[in-house]
Image 1 (cartoon, rainbow over the protein chains, first blue to last red):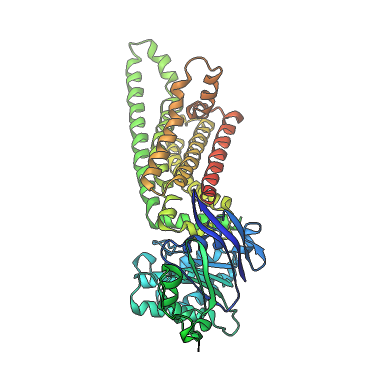
Image 2: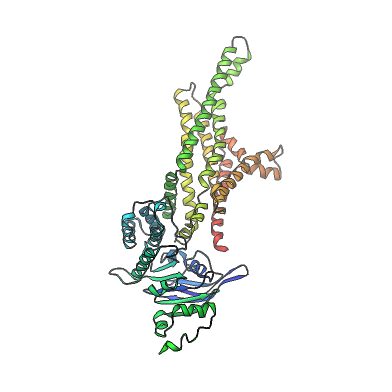
Length: 253
Length: 264
């Protein structure tokens, strides 16, 4: 559904992302892992077209993001690191605005907004002013704006950062719910960036690990579990470069 | 086209919720009312003086003939509003793009399918609506003169003066939009817009006597040159062209400046 082809991004002399390639299908929840400053946010911004890559391509649903931007962008829902909210708007008013700029026709907006609020548990908050909401609810509004136009691809940049444990588990349930099949609704392809390992283990089915802008690992989580590897160990080995004794070999049996 | 009205609608609603719009409209009503009243009292005072002098000053009769609402009230009133807009319009435009950057909502707008030109035009349209309200309010006071003035002022002169004021407001709005696209700090956006608008006004001082060579260019860029013609009731396509060219240029600059986020 979304495909990155040898994406690179250079800021001045610094290579933030180097020849990154991967592709993600509907129904997949991919954990995008890496330490702070590994290039996760830069990669996500390239996938959404906010930052153009220095070289490489992004293909969304068969459309090149830079040659047919409008067609490709319609297929992507994006929650940036800070939810892009207008504090003076009401929840429903804001979601209606997002639905409109994402290209939904006016007559479909009310229904789309209702559905997004329903899924994110915002029904009671529809008339509240966003600036008055708690952080957890604001994060939900952020997710609601990403899914309001039912995009097949969802890109979430650290969706649970700064939330309390109860809110974190709510948001995780919501993400898991979005990737599972529902009657009459298509599954989303979800990319989720984080550096919280238990979060990945809880909701992702595949992980892509990057460090200093290069891909270190791209495998289904089940496989790794079957080999007896924990993310903790992988992270230590791939990223920190520690020699972890008998990480893979011992547990494979 | 659809996207433009969606952006403009959101922007306008936020003007009225914030409530920038009410503050600006109130200030403008107070200041324009004050200017109008003071010019009106001034006008009456001089008129009475001239009438009293009629008996013993032979020149008073000629002066009285020249003393009319058009030159002594309408023109200075509209000219004084120019300086009010200089403060108010940058106050309206300062948040247009800078607050998006500060809120992080620029990521939402710039990753949406809307072309950048629609975003820029939508925001501009919202300010155009507000400037229209301001100029509409400025027109109320001259309307009183049509009701009670005897003889009533020249309708053509009033209309062309108001058109001039409107065009200046639209030009300030495009300058403010551009200034706002350059920074994420609203205060900087305000002062930048203010200085740029002031610069367009002050160019007049650099014109000097000879409008040749560089002087001619400066004279053309000077806002006052073109506004003065409209204020005197002269509607020249050259002056209208000036405003359209300048507004168009600042809109294009704004678009380029918003796009430049993608080049970096």
